[in-house]
Length: 355
Image 1 (cartoon, rainbow, N blue to C red):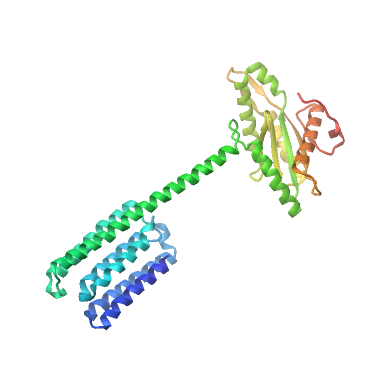
Image 2 (cartoon, rainbow, N blue to C red):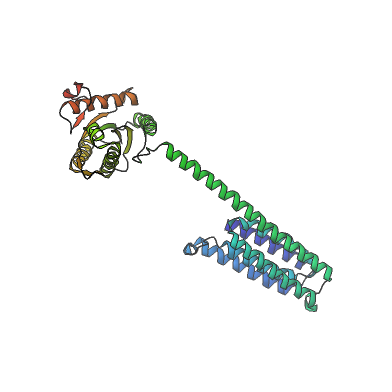
């Protein structure tokens, strides 16, 4: 963007030098203005390219570039004599190019500064014989057009910023709605719908890359007893506490979701069986060590039964993987609860009715 702005400014400098070469204005002032403009371009480029400008609020130096360009353009209007008509399109190009990077307050400053700078330039031309003078009506017409250009750019800037704000708000609303649709309202974990999507996607990725994929079903032991004896509010508190405990044990690469009721699903991608065993044992131990104080003052101790299965890369579906993890969970319950059971173990073939 800076290079493009510099090219536009160089074209403006070239236009002034052309009218100077044609003898339409004094050469020395124009040459000096061209030199100052070029030095300003080089300075801005160096500040941005070196990264030095990153320490400022406006690292692109947009406001400085536009203010500098307006100053140079106002000076050009003063010294170009009969060729000063080329200034208006130059001013329009500068403003239209830079206005989208300005805030409303900055654009208001540009409006006031531009009007003031050209007001001074018009006054000098109007009443100073050294700069050729011109008819009052022509000065007034120039001033009207300059104000029109400045005001139009300010109006467009405000419209663009308003449209950008509406777009950002809409994008945020969509993102929020998407987040709500994949989250469990009680625990804040992902929900069943999102976990099914992740199982499908991770299954495809695991088969494509040959990576391991493990799924664990976690079920709170004797949760019905808590609901029946202490009420659903107590059950909700226990579920939230359990979710927080498990989240504190797993890795950022793991995905935990509430599957339904007191049952949760943990998805572990590209994880070895040994690592998964250590992680799940840590989860089981932390849950057993946790104590949840209910509203009644009763302190509830929790345990969890876990069934885990590893995806068979040759044709197994995510549903099949979940079914094997569920079979292992049944086995963990049958073996006395508060333990981790793996699908494929001899004991995991035992099915029992869950409490």
